[in-house]
Amino acid sequence: MPYASSPELRALMLRACRVLHHFRIVEGFGHVSARIPGEARILMTPRIALGTVREEDLIELDMDGRQLAGGGRPALETAMHLAVYKRRADVMSIARGHPRNVAAFACAAEPLRIAHGFGANLGHVAPVFAKPVLAANPELGDGVAEALGPHVAVILQANGMLATGMSIPHACVNALFMEETAELQLKAMAAGLQPKHYTPEGAARRHGDDREHEPIRAWDYYVAEAEETCAWE
Image 1 (cartoon, rainbow, N blue to C red):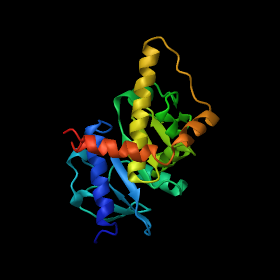
Image 2 (image 1 turned 90 degrees about the horizontal axis):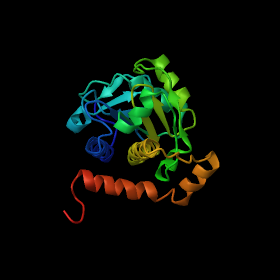
Image 3 (image 1 turned 180 degrees about the horizontal axis):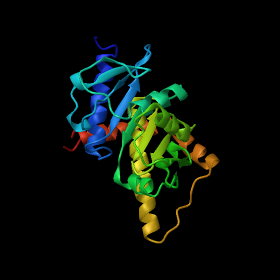
């Protein structure tokens, strides 16, 4: 069947693949998905490394996981994406990866309590889905969606993270902010410092300071860096 998604949405997903690969949010494993406007289906990357994805590899699935378009194979954790979309009507895109600093929290099954300003885009905490297995079936997918709850991102025990957004760029920026936050807080703790964590109210205030423009400005930078189009290059 032909794609229901627009060429622009597919191009944006390929750009997301390049950004997440460049900044090592993903390496051999990870995926991105997005709702298709006006359709009861999602666009998603296939079961290959994001750095190698071509347009014809992208797949479209209905909300029961049936493949409707595209030449790639669905990711093992497709059920996790679908469960989040079914539970959260506000989520328009998901970025899933294994960045190294977030993975340190995942190894310990510890929530990431936010102490860094850009991290406040995630709220005051990224909770944990406390099962060290891939969410490769509907039951486990529902478990991830429940652990995520109303939050922006969730840590997957022993297995990285999932970040949501109101668009593909927004989900990717949240994933990148999450990794930056984890790195800085680990460095502070390694130096014997104690991060001062945001309260829910404080995170909402910090996020609200530049809610509209901060993620867009970050995305523009990440794209320029990943595609080597910075002004001085």
